[in-house]
Length: 333
Image (cartoon, rainbow, N blue to C red; front, side, top):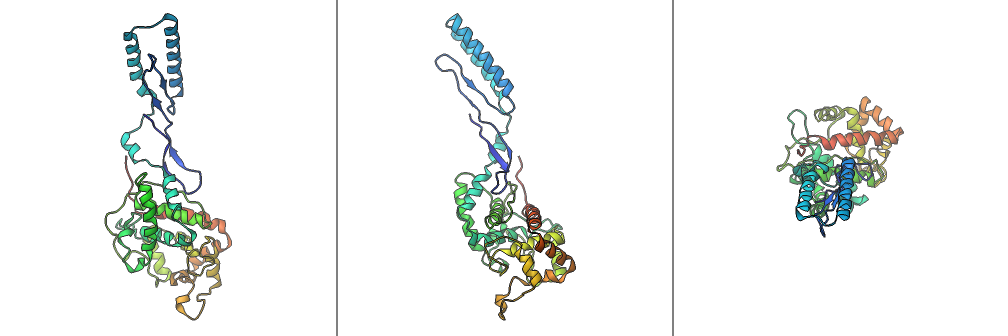
């Protein structure tokens, strides 16, 4: 029997992870007339040392007194078999089955993700989690986006799903991962890959088997007041709405480099070059991006993040964690 270190909560690419760890433990029976027990269960070192000491003394006595009867050996084996469970860490088998290694998910994502694909993957996160509403407890980070790709607001997301499906197939060969967890981790990895903050992602989300209700995502024609009302229904403050909008800093909307996650988005908004040409198709950003600049409260946060990239990174990290936990259903032991 072996129990190895198994994390159940993970961060992104940083080495700082939260773990419940179970030290390796193995036991084996008597060989050549002698019983050997190896125990290194976490929290049981003193007890294990005590048992080893007793076994050593018993074996020394055996060597001095000569061969013992098979009855003595069986009695000692029986006593050891009864004692051993008390040396092992107590772990529910059902819980062990639900715990998995987050590094496997991150490695699977990294194997298919590039900077050029990062913006699409991050958009996938927003469109999956963005359907959440506090009032009716509907939507949220539940993987339902895979059933919603035909909706007009999700145009193009099938490409990102195809990318992650390839990663999921490889990960599932090792351990099962929900779409909700995979998308949440992939978005965090996309941000980090493009130079943004590393974001810890809690694991254990369950997938929905049906599509979320329609009409829950912000329309591109909304003004600032309507945006604030919509995000409030999802549990987000004005500050969180503005900082999450900073995700548009990557992609092909004209806010600086499409593959660099930084605070250029906010700097460009303050410059107000709403179109890069007379062609509206070449407009920098979305109408909702510029709507933020027409509201005093939103504008205050735009200025904060334009001046302080570190603040933007810290606040984005916190808001992202809140976003990918919104409306999620979690595994229970």
